[in-house]
Length: 82
Image (cartoon, rainbow, N blue to C red):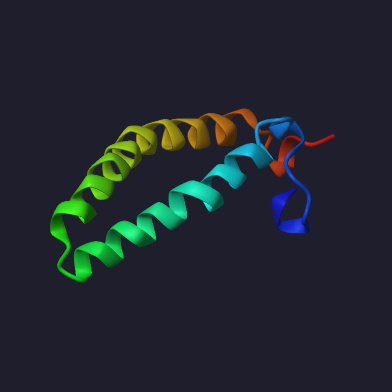
């Protein structure tokens, strides 16, 4: 199980290095840049970056929550393991 350093058996290929790479290479730097621009008073340019990023977050959050619930519901509890 996850607490022992192993992913759940039913997780399968649901985790992708591509998603992690895109998050780290594009989303995180763009978010930091947008925040820095907004904090430094460059509101117009910061907003141009911040609005699409916030829209992406609002759109992805329900999907991530639903997928997490589905994975938890689909994984067997420790008592059900054979």
